[in-house]
Image (cartoon, rainbow, N blue to C red):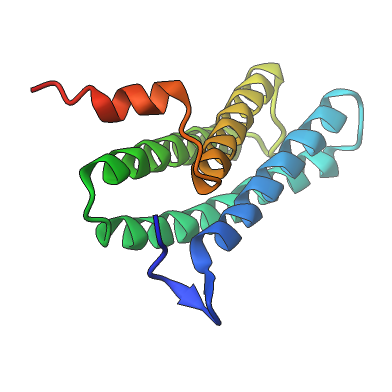
Length: 152
């Protein structure tokens, strides 16, 4: 899938995706440290990493939607929609985590929220792996099945 949104010849969406991935990963690390006994400020740092990651994630999702709007081949569009759904699922999970944390004065996460963060980070890692595979011209079997099984 050729990107239409470029700056100086470079696609914008892959660059924008790295910011929320890094911020979400740092939030998980900060929350782990907080659960292991670090000061409460570390939980607040994790909270603000989630906030910044969501802002960056919305920017990346917007760039992805613009690129997806120009795709004409149906099989490529299906794979693009699959990637977009994975990324949106991660953003929704982190938004839920953020909303739950707003109720805590220290903005700390408990064990349940931490596990949800780890799940969301794993899904985002899978989405990044899938994007890398597709960018290198390899299509995993489940993606090939999604393209070949049109249901009509």
